[in-house]
Amino acid sequence: MKNPYTVLTAEEAAELINDGDTIGFSGFTPAGAAKVIPKALADRAKKEHEAGRSFKVAVVTGASTGDSLDGALARADAISWRTPYQSDKNLRKSINEGKTEFFDMHLSALPQTVRYGFLGKFQWAVVEACDVTPEGEIVLTTSVGATPTFCNTADKILIELNRFHPKGLHGFHDIYEPQDPPHRKPIPIERPTDRIGSPVIKVDPSKIVGIVESNLPDESGGFVAPDESTLKIGKNVAEFFAAEMKNGHIPSEFLPLQSGVGNIANAVLGALGSHPDIPPFEMYTEVIQDSVISLMKEKKVLFATGVSLTVSDEVLLDVYENLDFFRPKLLLRPQEITNNPEMVRRLGILSINTAIEVDLFGNVNSTHVMGKSLMNGIGGSGDFTRNAYISIFTCPSTAKGGKISSIVPLVSHMDHSEHSVQIIVTEQGVADLRGKGPTERARLIIDNCAHPDFRDELHGYFDLTKDGHTPQTLGSAFTMHQKFLETGDMRGVDWR
Image 1 (cartoon, one colour):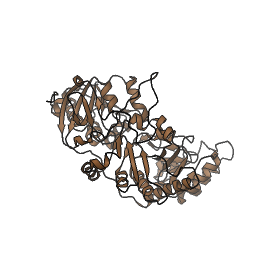
Image 2 (cartoon, one colour):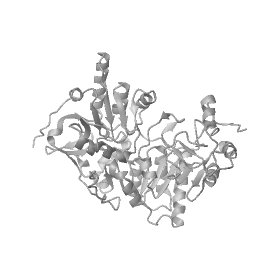
Image 3 (cartoon, one colour):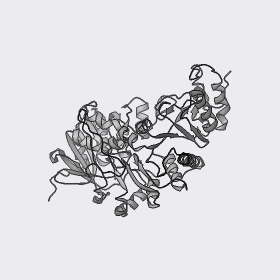
């Protein structure tokens, strides 16, 4: 059957979008993100600005995206407001300079927030797909994110039909949107392998205004080879889990794993895969990275379900050349399902995420540098941390060549409180905070996780206050941060 949709150029598609429109873009990380239309939209914004006319749009995605979306639009000063997460240096600069409004959100909450209308009306959904049928069935590419919700709530849809991704991806997605209260029912997943939805997004074909054809890979960068610090962090996490199995806290068949994105997460997964006492395991996570694919081929990861397949080009091509091998082992779902607190609690997820800094009592900052400058956003870390069977935060003990301690008296911005954080791991060791009061937590974190260069300094701070349930000296709590801002080095604080 002939495809009934109008074929447009990216420039023609961009001309359909108006100043002030709100757009839901596909993508969760650069995987599956729209590429050619946002780039054309950025070029249009530049021309409008040069002509003295206003042109900005609101940008909502599943999570971060690639340079062709967040980067291009930020450089063109074309984003009025942005949510729920970003990782682009140009957009970060615009946000921290106050040029772009940004509000951070738990990723599991975004689709419901969109459906309820809390973010206003969405004029457009711009979606990357590998196939679309005349009946309005859209086959996504390497991520799902919040795309089903964008398609169902937006007035109109533009599709980037990306020929780089094979139509054989049909069957790798499990599209399911829960009903809204008061009609919501339990999500019928009892194991990570359960399929509960459709392999496609189904929309009214009349909503699809046009198709823009492309042939572009995802803009996902590769991962840096693990260094000594990240290797030690990975080893510490693996040995902690092995000990938990030995003492009966984790069942012998293990539990589903969630791991954040990045080089530390990749190193942790590699260490788990190579540890002789960790059995083959399943993953119920957000982002499926290179190490997961390697571990699947080694039969250490039996199955992985996530929101996106965020891998290097080489690894993605390997997956595409072996679709039949990976088809029963990989499944992509909406973030509303992968990050759902109901599912995290039910499945008993082992959660591993990354911190920027941790304070002496177990509070975690994962979003801001020196309390004020946004790095990326909270992402899905809160969804998993608060509801996990065991929640772990990892970070190197120092940053900036040893001039910053990642263990501080009081976090300069708090994303995860001591009530949700159970385990802290650095390359120095592990602090198990479960069942520990504030004083005991502080001693454990300093002695087990802080860098030796900062241990005396941190003990010196803690010794300032002897009373109170949570010993804290508000007048000195940020002295280490202040010293870094003034001198470029946290070391050598004199508490007298």
